[in-house]
Amino acid sequence: MFAPPAFQAKICAPDRLAASLAALPRPLVFTNGCFDILHRGHVTYLAQARALGASLVVALNTDASVKRLGKGDDRPLNALEDRLVVMAALECVSLVTWFDEDTPIARVLDCRPDVLVKGGDWPVARIVGAPEVQAWGGRVVSIPFEVDRSTTALLEKIRRL
Figure (cartoon, rainbow, N blue to C red):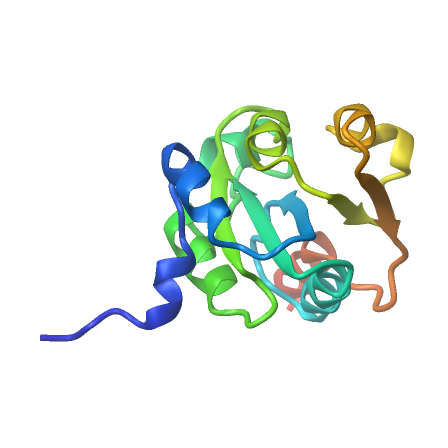
C-alpha cells in the first residue's frame, strides 16, 4: 500500500487549527491566496514571507471562493485538494489550511499571527486582518514583487499558444 508523503501532515482543516498551531514555533507568519498555478513569483514570495518568522501558515481560497473572486469561469484550474498538497510540499510552508468565505479574516483570527503578509499589489491599508493584527501588537507587511509573474498572465500566454 502506498503511504502518503510526510508533508501531507502539514494540511490542516480549519476546525483542527488550534491544536496544530500550538505546535508551531513563534513568531508565526500568515498569508493567504489562491495559488492556482504555483510559479516562481509565488515561491519567491512565500520564502520571503517565511523569513519574517519561525513558521508560515498559508490559507488557500476554496474553489468556490476563487470563483467568486471573478478570476474567470475556468478558475481555479487546480482543485483545492491539489493546491493544498502542492503548497504543503514546499519547505518554507509550516502549515496549510483553507477558507470558503470571501476573505480570510476567520483564519487570521484563528491563527493570531505575529506577522500578516501579502504581496506587493496589496497596500497594508487594504490587507484583510491588518487592523486586528496591529491591535494585538503584530506587524503587517506588503512584500514588494521581486519576480514579476502572474497566473493570469501565464494562462493568457498558454491560451495564445
